[in-house]
Length: 99
Image 1: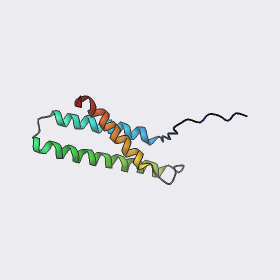
Image 2 (image 1 turned 60 degrees about the vertical axis):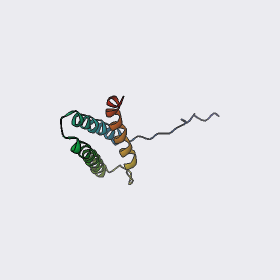
Image 3 (image 1 turned 180 degrees about the vertical axis):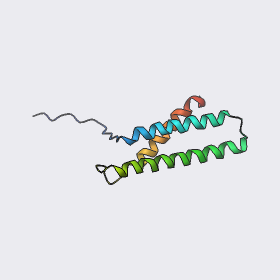
Image 4 (image 1 turned 120 degrees about the vertical axis):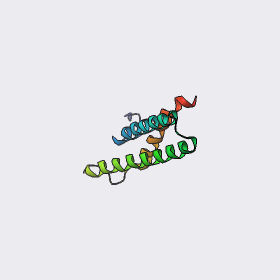
């Protein structure tokens, strides 16, 4: 008998990854708004960097807390996937300003 075709790339996406992507988009829009405001140049880059790092850490902590309450969740959390989704959302939000 023929076996069913398996996809070439198996990508597993849990329900928290789209939330991380949306959070990255929001963080990117806030950083873009910070760049457009008239704050001093010496403070613009450090404050944007601190905001991105703190925002990403807060999102990961919130997703871990949501996962902790779910009894069906696997014991290992895909933190690397969440950070990648946050970064992808951040780049997607800032990309129109770069080109």
